[in-house]
Amino acid sequence: MSSWFKVNKNLDSVDRLYVLEIMVCDTLVYKVGKASGHSCKQRMLQIIGSYFDVYRVTPVIKVVKDKEVTNVFEKETKCHHALAEWQFTPEKAFSGSTELFLVDKEKVLEVYNEVVKSES
Image (cartoon, rainbow, N blue to C red):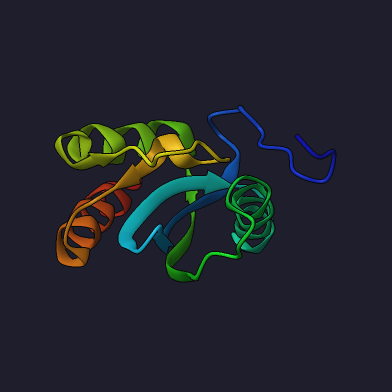
């Protein structure tokens, strides 16, 4: 992992919880993840680079949600558990590919908003 991308594991820190819409081999999926910093941009660029290394093509990625939250690890885990039945596994692994979900956008946003709303 690059030195410019570090996630603080302190539960009281403020990090970001995001949802990305990604076209993976002609399949539209959603990634729920965490990042540190002012936006999920650095993490998105890391995913694009990793995807390119594997598939030799640049993926189409759109930021759907990106919000500063506390307890980001807990919130990300809650989202992943709620979406587990829709987990998507691509043919070839790339950075972040274990956190992809083949589900309607509305469902991802419902889960995301519910988890973010539970902000302490």
